[in-house]
Image (cartoon, rainbow, N blue to C red; front, top):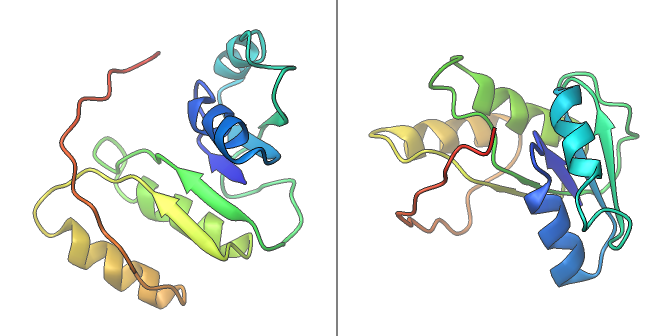
Length: 134
């Protein structure tokens, strides 16, 4: 499992804990990754963290599952789509991605995913606050 834009590593840690699978968390922010590898969970679970830019990953193309909570594209337009493209370039069989629910977002995401050869199978709308962790 690959967590693009891992930040604090919570998705990577949770995936490893719940699924018992090997997870790779990738983020460009070195300071954040240093904090993440000092977590009590690091070393206990099958998780590695890599500092890399989402467009240029040091991973081979394989049948990954990508779980991600990408930047929403609110502050930098297109950032969320860039993460979807990266997941596609990795050869992801399954992409689970959390996106901000704004008007027109679902249709926009469906069109971008179709261009990449994917389709949205299940969409769930949940309202829950996610506090900034850094």
